[in-house]
Length: 305
Image (cartoon, rainbow, N blue to C red):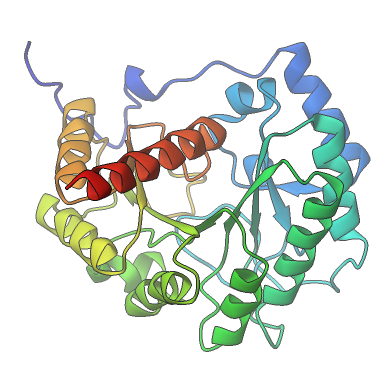
């Protein structure tokens, strides 16, 4: 079979086209989320997988408002001065988890550089409220970088989420234009800090491709993440949300995504998700189960060695 030819940034290839959300299950999930006045990254970031995920009662809830203090060139979430934190948000979130019957929940947030701890304590309060309301639900967090606010990280770690995700987003050469408010090595330090304080927590990180990076740079990011003891890596296609955002340099072919998956597995990640439609929380519940199985298998092999 011939390799797929790369598509130009002007034409969206067939392999990233998705169906519009129309199912009753999708509508039911939407109704619960809107009734409790919760924000989701699914809507705010115009995720292409919203129809599939919401039809399966899986949503990534975005806490601490819908306004970010950063202005990343890839992100569709609005930028500005955020409002006050909602003290009822942890309970509202726990109620939503209960009503939707979620077995696995993903909590993310906008960047809150205006807060002394970057919002770390609020993350912890949300985790605690959900543990109380739904003790069997596993919890995944996708946090900001807590730049120069390491105590924010420690608040979240102390609450013991099952998975701690923080996305590296792109290769270091592109940070100045794509992620100007962040620092590549700070993000690596965050991920390493989580493991140093609680090795039992799974760590996860991801990048977007199609922004102008090279294969060699992607492979170096893999090495850097493994040096930080990251367990799970995600790799997905960058899609330009609006004309004012960073343009797509190219649409990466499925063959190249398979190459990245093979390389990442060879470098020792417990789990890899690499495909055009991969996003941080896409298939999060099933991926968490596979991640847990992979660790158990690894531990069994170590005992037998």
